[in-house]
Length: 320
Ligand SMILES: C[S@@+](CC[C@H](N)C(=O)[O-])C[C@H]1O[C@@H](n2cnc3c(N)ncnc32)[C@H](O)[C@@H]1O
Image (cartoon, rainbow, N blue to C red; front, side):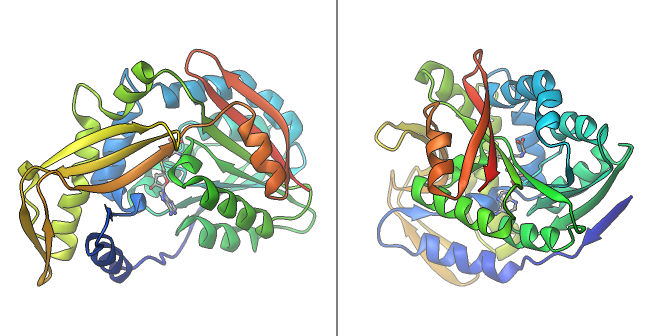
């Protein structure tokens, strides 16, 4: 069964975030959530299949090998809420394993309507799983989904793909604390975290030879042009992926190749030559870090499964 709870996102907040992010005196910045329109979601899905992007395959391997173990830990759960489900392909393994124990409601939460549609289509054939999708931001969707839990049902929240790494470290913990506040003791969070690894392995994942990540990044400018009446000249912006060693994160930027002026709906912004617009961060973690994050945010990390080929950890937290 497939039901859809209504959209809550507006063009207005996009316009406001773009105006404030590009109008800054210091580092210009655009929130990474805006990378995911229809084209961005399709490009991200293609990126996950690139030879350089080992992250998704690592998590798929963990879920293929251990979804039975994960389901054994979660057999009482009647509701699965997934934050930023994307296409939902990886989630199939977990849902199939869980549905062997108990029928359940699966709630994908997505900011991207096209990703939500793909996810619903991808998983619609699963027996004993009702799908209730929310086109919403993470926490708004989570609280709307959890409000529908049946009495006695435990909830498991999935936050896969190391999307937690898009938050800076402190806001990431603040975000985990807010998830915890929405849950009851005994509910779970399955958190995917990409681990630190050699730069020779890491950088190409965000700067691939085919140029898909460059297209994914520059599509944000296409989106501003189409939806907000901007006049970005794409040929004047270069994709940059760099490793910030102090913060232990990949940063994606768009570098202006000339001093130029851009107009968005009658407002002008000036970019100096070599100035960048920061569009995404992907923080990397030490193997023990997720357990420490759990302790500080009202959870306990009860299991961790690690892929060694592409260091990646799947962490099972319980709300305490
Ligand atoms: C890095 S992708 C990961 C997708 C999938 N979970 C995976 O592991 O392949 C992040 C997903 O979260 C969605 N997303 C990003 N920011 C969001 C937000 N603030 N609220 C809801 N969804 C968001 C995007 O549309 C995208 O599908």
